[in-house]
Length: 133
Image 1 (cartoon, rainbow, N blue to C red):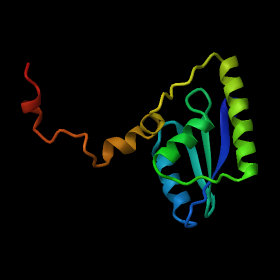
Image 2 (cartoon, rainbow, N blue to C red; image 1 turned 30 degrees about the vertical axis):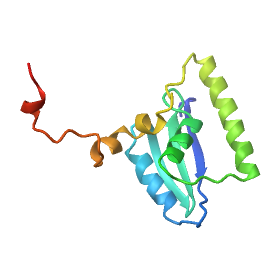
Image 3 (tube, rainbow, N blue to C red; image 1 turned 90 degrees about the vertical axis):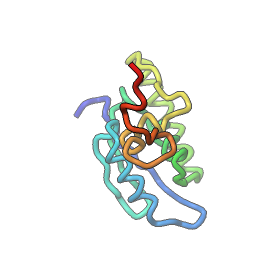
Image 4 (cartoon, rainbow, N blue to C red; image 1 turned 120 degrees about the horizontal axis):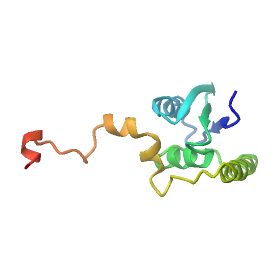
């Protein structure tokens, strides 16, 4: 196994204890080109493998939060999150890899999902109306 591949656990906990958060997040992560392997461990936990040269645990977490998922915020999870962030940022600094996430993590990580979903950013006119030369 490559030393840059990490497998981390994402724990979900919402205000209403929604049970469909983990499977929904697993589907989104499985569709992402940055995440290589995804599985739902228990109803509120997702295991995801990713390459540290492309994305970090913090970037994936912030992307999930940006999409409206409720992540666990208990003391143990916050400590684990800080430890992962420190270790991964140190490893990336040693490999001379910079962060590509500048406020648009979800768009970068879930680009396939955004391209296929219906949203207001599409021009409905035919292509010959949009190209003038």
